[in-house]
Image (cartoon, rainbow, N blue to C red; front, side):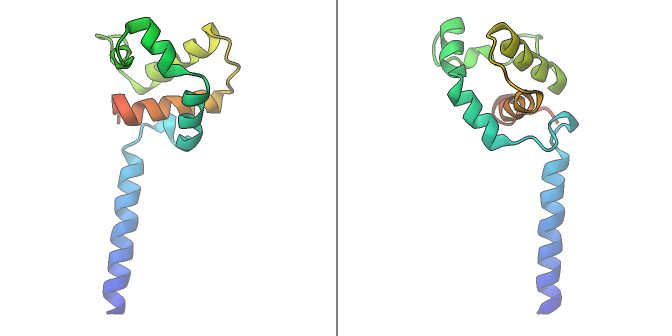
Amino acid sequence: MKLLAVSVLAGAWLLGGAALAQQPAIYQGADLKLGEKLIADNNCVACHQKKVGGDGSAIYKPAGRINSASLLRGMVEQCNTELNLGLFPEEVTSIAAVLNRDHYKFR
């Protein structure tokens, strides 16, 4: 029974590690809860709705523009600069990691 418990725990640990390994290296260690909060606090969805209409989701994955994790992070940095949001680099990374998780799914 003890061996079974150890095997189950080891398997769970390996699966958890596999899930983390699927995240792009650029987002390793990103604070997803912080990214979610910053998206809400900075009214990102409302801005996207003004730009593209509807629910704002059409802004994600424009044809050929953002095709890598680093380009996605760069786009968030561009919003940060253009809108003078004053985000720190780790905050930009956290936002990009949330967008990747929810919309882009780069590995």
